[in-house]
Picture 1 (cartoon, rainbow, N blue to C red):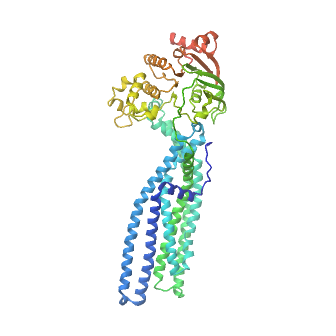
Picture 2 (tube, one colour):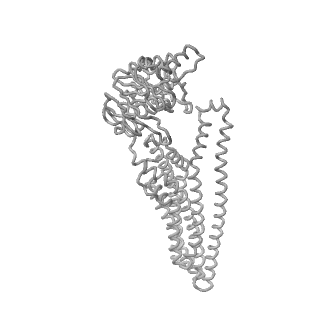
Picture 3 (spheres, rainbow, N blue to C red):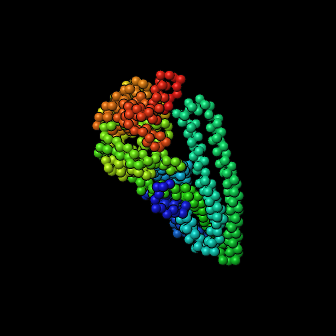
Length: 601
């Protein structure tokens, strides 16, 4: 991905701790403190219990003194505090988990919404987002593992100190019981991460097929062409490849884990044997041996729990490192905003060329022209000729690969890095269909004015929206989308009018309409062009269309072919030249007269 930040990638465990600390805030430190209190309580219980048990064994039950009673009472009180701290930590831990999951999701959404539009043409960027999306469960695992790991480490340290007072010889060999598990976990983590990282492209392909099958707008075509079996077959093949690899990973994972568990158990048995040897040799009092064994079991349990949590944090920390980098990247990107400029007197494209990141050929090649305020300019050409790409550059959404587009002499790329000019309104072929109310679907054209009901109604009237929206169950408050309770769907032509109303609500001085009449009937199309003619007063309108009958009245027509501007002029001038435009227009005109003639669109 081209957009990067200066970021030194942390180790996986450090990344996990950093992530949960950032996301959890004060709740994270509260959980750690409560877990530490719980662990400290266990150590104190162990020490007091050991001292009490030693008194009773050495002196008999007749020495059950008030001091002994106080000590036993203290154990009970501490046990209650430990129970409270554990319960409180568990509740607060849930909050840390929720905050961590939100932090990771928000980081991904921020980058996707703030990054340059050009990055969306980069497969590496999509792989990175896909890894983040697929590994969001890693944030949940890490949020659970990190406090548990720290708790186990703190508790283990306390028990270790207690065991030092009982028998320092038992400490190192007990800790050794966790070493095999750590080595096994590290090896398993490396292999699992390599597997997941390498599968991101296939995961994206499977996700794409899932979307085709599941999304409502694709359902008619899937059924019409009977694609379900074919699509499920391709999806299944991709998943079978993944499962075959997973089976191999799991076999090696299980084999290593079994070896680690056997080695850990053998070490622990050695500790028990050492206790017996120390008691028989007189180095360890018989009254202290039970407490020593309990401490060994507790320390071994905490060490192994810490290693398990550490392994999880290490494994999933490799994924959350991506989230941290996305969060750092999001912090360097400006928030989307509308840049306020004055309407231009002249927009000039000077030797503009553009290449998409993954493409070999130029999408635009040395294009130059000038637009003046108040003109209606049409752009025509066959599919793939560069019309929509040129529209995106004029809107400031893409920077030219070479050349410059100037807004009254100022480079457009300097005004805004990713579109958002107040004086530019765009309707693209693929416009947003939001599960919002009809009013909000229009108002998103100028988010600073959401709530301007009068402005929404005015734009709706001009785009021919009011007549069908008022017939909906809740009028302008009706959600647009059958996926929403109480919502409804619109026809393609009605949705297109909503999109046009959206750009009219923006009230911009420079309008770009990319195939705005593609889904409109002839009557609606005629009404729209009356609106466009009205809008042209004091505004500039760029109209991209395959329908030559709708562009012939434009002040100028730009003809694109294979990324180059090959002709420019009025309809009359271009027809007189008898070039590409004249040929395309004639073919389409004959098609209207003779239905057996194919259109040239």
